[in-house]
Amino acid sequence: MKKIRIVVVDDSAFSRRSITRMLEGLDTVEIVGFAGNGEEGIQKVIALKPDLVTLDLEMPKMDGFTLLRILTTRFSVPVIVISALSGADKVFKALELGALDFVAKPSGTASIDLLSIKEDLQKKVRQIIDLRSKKTPRGIVGNTRGEVDPTTPALLDVAAQYTGIDLVAIGSSTGGPPALQQIITSFERKYPFAVVISQHMPAGFTKAFAERLNRSSHFDVKEAEDGDLVLPGSILIAPGGKNMVFEIRGGQVTVCIVEPSESDRYVPSVDAMLKSCAGIYCKRVVAVILTGMGNDGSSGIRSIKEHGGCVLAESEDTAIVYGMPREAVATGVVDRSVTLDKIADEILLQGGFN
Image (cartoon, rainbow, N blue to C red):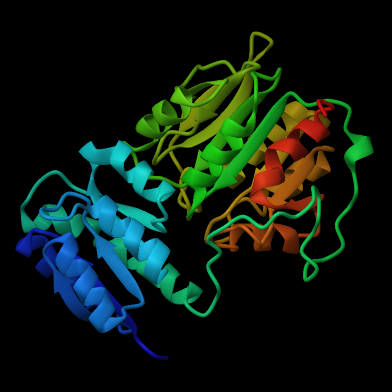
């Protein structure tokens, strides 16, 4: 297999060396160049034509955001942002600008601190390698509502079966933050259902993500805490590194924040969230599987269907990574495959609001 060629852009010589050592541990990777600022980064990309760029956002001369815009719009080069936890809001801005994913850089400068990201960085680069032969969509294809991917199994037209919803449960991973923002901001008012979200994300980032969504949403958005009530008009985001499940306390649906199990490959676990809410909400829940690598959610949606709920999956036309939606559709229980720009409308249709 041809090696994936990477350019490392970071103004810290120590970080460049450390990132190089981490990635050179992968047999399928070749580090072809380095850059200490954005201007040099552009020159390297033009000269070396890499398959992937790792990018620090804080740099002299030309900042990482400017370089990111150029890389994603002019060169269509996949970018993984490596940023400190203190810059969480900047990370989400970078994802909105087209970065494929991010790795949280520790605050310390010692070698042992930076090397702590090795496993996460290598995993995400492997994902890029897996996706290299596939087209990465950058825009939204204007499909009509409910149009399905012709390569997937026939999906059920179930619009008439659902007369109302109390909960929308959304799972996402790579490419998820901007997709979630598009869906949440598409709701033109606060509707009488709750939304719960499990987005694969490390600890420390989900609070900033929730605050960012809250600024642009009619719903009340927050990072979920143990004991929170699942109320209409609210959006609860599972905290990074933990699982969000539910139970009935005093007649009200209540959040329980729990440690992931050894079997949870992806955290926060979409499967754990969906299985937990399926028996509580039964036919009054809509589950949505968005862009992401892997198969998280494919087990949980079976529970949703067994209890009479509705399942939507993002279409391949718009999914940045069509891994999780593909695995969901392969179960045969997905009711509709929908482009990202139509998902909010489809949720409202299922709830009887359209």
